[in-house]
Amino acid sequence: MQDAIKMPGLRALGVADTIMLREYLSRWPREHCDYTITNLIVWGKIYNNHYLIFKDRLVVLNPKYQYIMFPVGEYLSPEELEELVRMFRPYFPEAQLILFPHEYLELYPRVNEIFDIYEDRDWADYIYSVENMVNLSGKKLAKKKNLISQFRRTYPEYKVLKFSEDRLQYILQFTHKWRRERSAEGIYLMTEIKAIGNTLELWNDLPVEGIIICRYNRIVAYSIFSQQSPDMVTVHFEKFDPDKKGSGQVITWETARYLQGRYKWINREQDIGLEGLRQAKLSYVPDRFSRFFGSKLKGDTVGLSMPEN
Image (cartoon, rainbow, N blue to C red; front, side):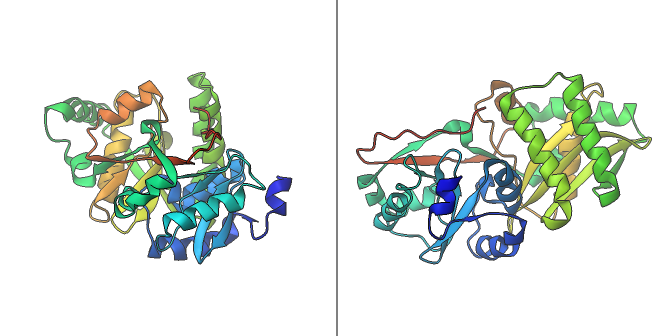
């Protein structure tokens, strides 16, 4: 942390920076979920995200893992990107640049003369058509459709409610109940629980929405989401009662129905290399992936340390 304080121009990223983030990301939207305001703030609170302005571009740093997110703004030249990485190195010796847009790699092939670019499948985002997630057409999605039908027949009284401030405490209670009953542990999961807590704590300060599946005033499932770009929304969190058959499929379907007409695409984030999560996301037949490209400077012996799964 002391290194971050010492680096000139580097500041802690927090809720007070929401307007600044909105200005940059509305002008230069990015498809990868790490660039949503919600993720930058709620996960950034955990990883102590910092930022600086470099040649009028927004640059976000995760000091814990020493990775630099590809700058938000007009594209810099490969030489300027090298300059950026080397600027961080006296303070963060293992700093590396990640989240290269695929478009950038095609427009600036000479970037490969300066950086060794690699792709990491574990951190690719799953992108789905909203219409496909509502209609669930085809044999591959027939089981999802059947489970939704079963849930609706079994629990015809269920309701879909919007998140509101008076419901936030019950959503948090449901989240912890879900974790306890499933004996869910692990570094990533516990960090996700913290991120959900941060989201609910900062709810009124974030451009975020959510819906709840309710039955007799009891939560069965919920989802939390926010705008990624003018035609894309990102689903950040989704939790459901596994004892209610079909509840997982219903919250996914109702979320898509809620977003229908507002967005064309749903980003359901990454699988982070967890096999069960990968199979679950693949089972919805993604339309495409927002690919993850990281880098190392040519001749660099520094390794990139990604967050633990």
